[in-house]
Length: 213
Image (cartoon, rainbow, N blue to C red):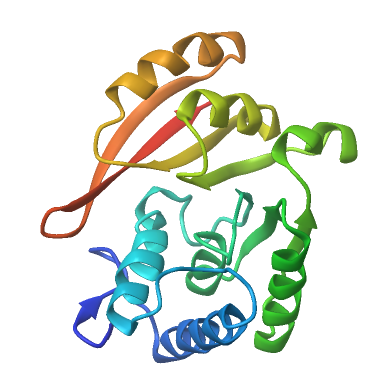
């Protein structure tokens, strides 16, 4: 399936018409709210499909099997990426969206309620989560280019259950960031299992860093 000429689903996956319609409805809610608050600088249909939806859904092949429910915490979610598109594509995800800006969290709650999507929306920072929600961990944590990998690992990995994964969405070259993050990974009992290059379009590549705990 596609929106316009952009294929949104990764190879081996398909989105239903209902899922595509829900993605479109979410885009409209984001862009409407964007007129009053800073949610995204990406506003054209083509860029939104590519840089928000296709980018978010590139994690689908890495997630657990479709018949396996799991919990996912999206750190620094902003306007809901990648968490909301993933929830639309995989409704069995137990989704939590975390953002440090209160008005974005209010937007997320209202938007998800309007779309009938169930998720927990938390106002706060990842480093405060162990204090605010003691003992709460998740099967998977995600973060999309919100900080250097070293800092992301320090914030995210305490929130990942043993045996779970942190999926960091980064730029094309993470060699130096991975080197700098190595001491933090060792301290927290985690390791980089894989780095997956994702070509969103010719010349536009990002890397998903798969970190196992």
